[in-house]
Length: 139
Image (tube, rainbow, N blue to C red):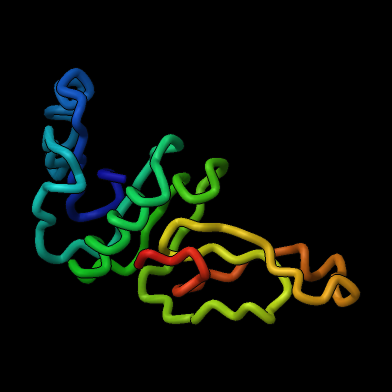
């Protein structure tokens, strides 16, 4: 990422990993801290959270902090625990309990709605909609 963007902040709690990153790129700022308590710099537009062991509560806290800072997107593997997705932090799509298909909420919850089993088709199994305000929501 540092080779493509103006500035990258790497926030890592493990000092051994921090030491390895130091001096890698001129525009890479390496910080040894907890990302949940570290003060985000102004102007953050994209964040990356790579933690398969991230809990739903931690995910929701990261999302809240990033939204509050004005961040627009989050690249993460924390919500689905597999693969990497880009979360639109500006999404205002409300959760719809009547919509058939997969959803992923900003609180970290993912799920599948099937209010009418007779209407499920192969198309309803593809894709996922990013929502806010699901039944488990903490955001």
